[in-house]
Structure formats: C-alpha cells, structure tokens
Image (cartoon, rainbow, N blue to C red):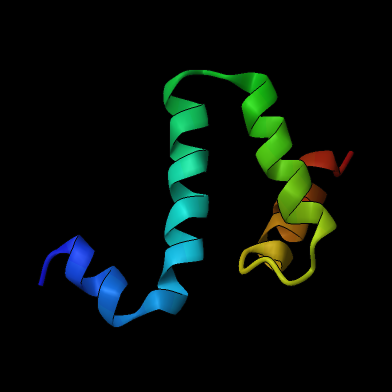
Length: 64
C-alpha cells in the first residue's frame, strides 16, 4: 500500500503526516524561523499529537 492509499484509507493520519512534513522541510532548509513557528504551534495547542512530547523535550533542553 502506497502513501496516497494510506492517506485515503486513514484520513485522520493526514494532519500528522502534514505536520511531520512541515517539520522535515524546516530542518532540511535549515530554516530556523520556520522551525520556531512549527514548534510554537505544537506547544500552544494541546490537541496537537506531539504536544506532550514537545513539552518533555523542551523541559529537557531548558533544564539547567
């Protein structure tokens, strides 16, 4: 099953796929501002699938 078929069969996966692609593109382009916009969106919306993981990662980074 290809990507398009998976996204058609499981439409609820599409937002997660798009979010990961946005993240990958920001990293690929070394676009710091794009990454920060993506990160801010993740941290401000508790309904985002990676919200809890982002909080844990930020806590680990910010720990003295």
